Image (cartoon, rainbow, N blue to C red; front, side):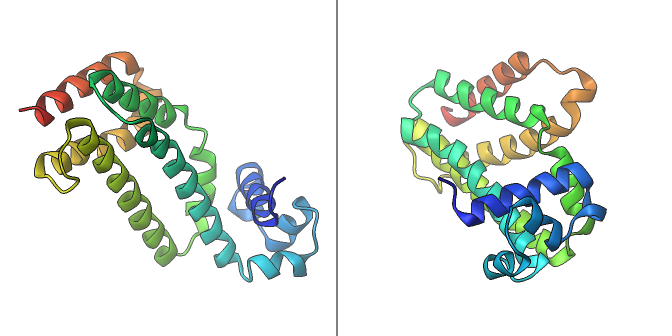
Length: 186
């Protein structure tokens, strides 16, 4: 059974995607979540609190996906390729683009900056952890950070450009796997 906060976050996300920032209000979220405005405000007092909740929910779901790879234990080149390919698949799906367009169109600059900093720090740390695990090095090894620094911006850029350029995910996954594997093992 979903918690009240999960129901609220799903309702808010749905409204943002369907109506954009101009159609988003606390009252609409309350109606979509089948609760009173007062009940919604018990969980998220202001629109900013709700937006922050949406952003944190996104970070948590992204982290859960990466943690699946870490818990399974990355052991070889095939595991690295699977991580890279899965991330490229996720980035290329663009399911989140309407959500982010609407969210970023009216989110306060401070909140957006905090979210992006937190999101990239979390994902970067998880990526470093997985790469370090793969080659049995400490998380703070320079080669691990360099490999993560290469992959993370590529993943983001791929999500934005691949639908327009028709880039082959299989080929890119192979190229990135070779590059990172060779770099980590040099």
